[in-house]
Length: 65
Picture 1 (tube, one colour):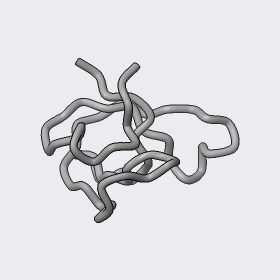
Picture 2 (cartoon, helix red, strand yellow):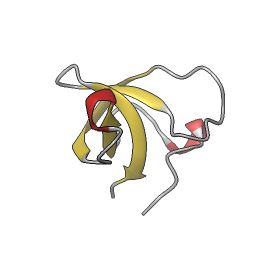
Picture 3 (cartoon, rainbow, N blue to C red):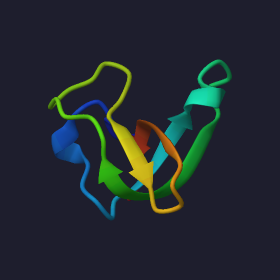
Picture 4 (cartoon, rainbow, N blue to C red):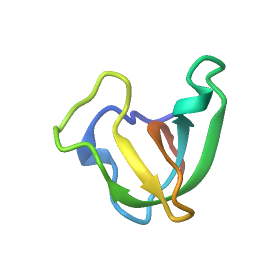
């Protein structure tokens, strides 16, 4: 499991696990490829917010290799 709280660890094209807003209570993750990085700051305690290729938006929990 890699750190999704630091923006420097995430680039477009990176495969990640994100938690969607609707899944925050359960912690269920969704996998996909990063299309856009939405968080402007270099660090976020709940994970950097990204948009996946399929349009879903959520916070990065894991960076997949």
